[in-house]
Structure formats: structure tokens, C-alpha cells
Image (cartoon, rainbow, N blue to C red; front, side):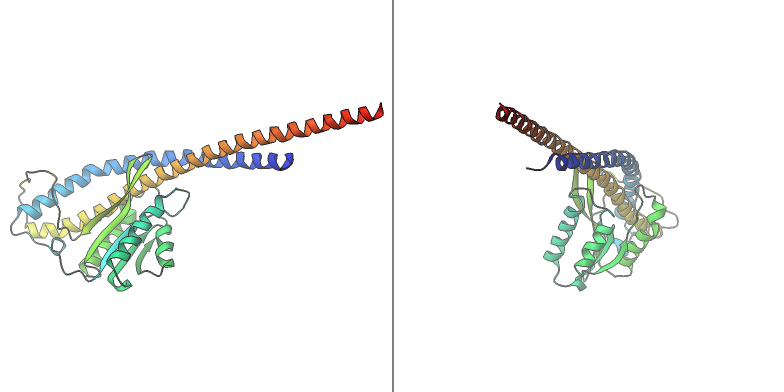
Length: 286
């Protein structure tokens, strides 16, 4: 049995750990609230730009753009969004596992795919496996603005236009609730399944032409899909970390209760032994 001092030291260290995890839980809860608001605030913009883009692309017979047309797939691009840090439960591992399984099933060599890794966890994972990482981004802010990741989104969409890859998918954690996040994959390019989400398309007058407008609008729409997924992933990250830290705090409390019980039992056993020795000594003197 461990000594009273050893048990007491372990109780103290566990209490200090629980204080840290409790603080991290509160910080993540605060960040999650703001990230959730950012993600929800971006939805109306996404819905409107999707409606306008669909109305022009589908409703105009003379409208055409390379981003709307499928071409023979020689290489596939994958945008993978993870966090820079751990302590978030299965937040990162689920996304990485899903992407890795997809790559193993679809591709036979590194020449058939390219990875755009966002977050240190994704960068370290794919580079560690020797996979074809063409862009790696770390240090994305907890509450990113579009201006901060504009270069990334522009470069990602531009590589499709340059035929670096012929289709582009994005993998991330979709925020459902504070305790639920779902691994989600979306096809970003080409935009072959774009729709307005309603049965009726809005009629617009174009100046100078629908095709000229699509040249500007379609890249912006694709970039917005990436930014919206990043906001969604950030809300999921903070929610996952808050849940993980809450579980860690609860486990620490359970461990402290068990250690307190062990400490009291050991202390009681020590006292009983001392009394027995005293009684035995007094009986020997009689």
C-alpha cells in the first residue's frame, strides 16, 4: 500500500491538474460561443451568394465558366482542416482518419492527389506519412477573418484553374452542437452541383454579361465555401476542447475522491496499528 505522503502528494497534484483543465474548459467555452456566432453570421451571406451564383449559372443560357465544367480527373485536391493543438478529444483524429481512408481507397500513388493542410495536426500527420502536401498553413487565428485567409483561398482556387488538380474536396468537423461534431466532406470544385436551394431562380439583368460576372463571382463563391468551412471547424474545435476538458476535470474529481478514500483508509489503518502497539506495550508491562 502506498504511504500517506505518496497519496497526499498525488491528491495535491491531481487537484492542480483539475484546476488547469477547469480553466481551459472555461476558456474554450468562451471561444466556442464567439466562434459559433461567427459561423452562424456567415450563413446568410453564403446562402445569398449561392442563390445569385446559381441563378446566373443555371438561368443564363450563354453563361459558361471552366469552374462549372467537369474535366478528366488526373489529380484530386484535398483541403483538410484540423487544429494546431491537441487536447480536443477525437476532433483531429476523426478527420485525419477519414481523409487517409479516402486516399487509400481512391489513389495508388502520391501523383494522383495533393493535400492542402490547414492546422499543425494535419501538416504533421500527412508529412509524417510522406504524402503530397503542396500547401501547409499553421497558426490560423481562433476567430479568423476572411482577410487573414484570403491568400490561402485564392491560391487554393487558383490551383484548380491552373490545373494543378482537376477536382477539389474539403474535409472538416461540422459544428452540430456543443457536444456533437460531425466529420464532413464537400466537393468544392468543379461547381457541377450548384443550386440556389429553392425551386424558383431569381431573374437578374447583367452588365456587361453573365459570363463576365461569373468570372468574378465563381472564384469568390468557391473561396467563401472554404472560409465557411474554416469558421465551422473553429466552432467545432472549441466545442470539442471544452468537452474534453470537462471530461478531464470530472475524471480528476473522481480520482481525487478515490484517493481521499484511500488516504482515509490508510490513515485509519496507521492509527489502529499505533493503538494496537500501545495496548500491547501496556499489557507487556503489567
